[in-house]
Length: 140
Image 1 (cartoon, rainbow, N blue to C red):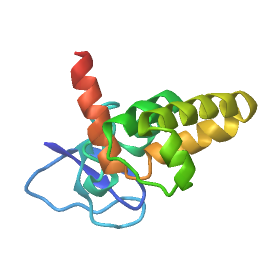
Image 2: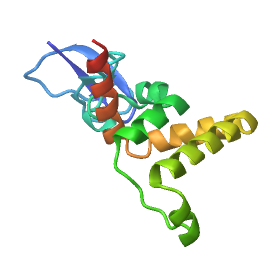
Image 3: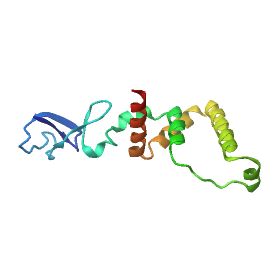
Image 4: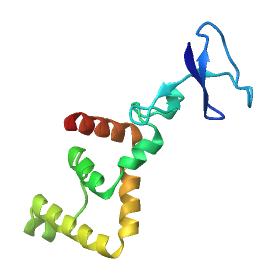
C-alpha cells in the first residue's frame, strides 16, 4: 500500500494498491505518488517540494537572521560604487557599514525588512532548501 496525491486538490489518499491507477474522488484528476516533506512529514506532489521541503516549512525558516547567514554562505554580488568611496573603504568596511545601516533601518522599518528578508530567502527555493538542509545537519 502507498500514498497517492492529487496535484489539483492538494489532497493525499492513503492505502492505495501499488498496482492500480487511481483518480481523485473530488476532481477526477489522476493521482500521482505522494512525497513527504523532510520537516513536517506532510504529503505533496513531487513538483511541490524544493529539495524535499514544502513551501510552508521553508517560509518558517525565512527570517532576517537567516537571510544574513544565508547571504554569507552564498555567492558574492558586485555593485557599482562611487570611485572615491571605493578608494577610501575596503570591501569589508563597506559591508560593515551596510550591516550597521540595515540594523538601524530594521529599528525603523522592521516589518519591511522582515518581509524583504523572507523574499530574499525564498527567491530560489531550491537553493534555500539546500541551505536549510545543511544547517539542520550541522545542528544534529
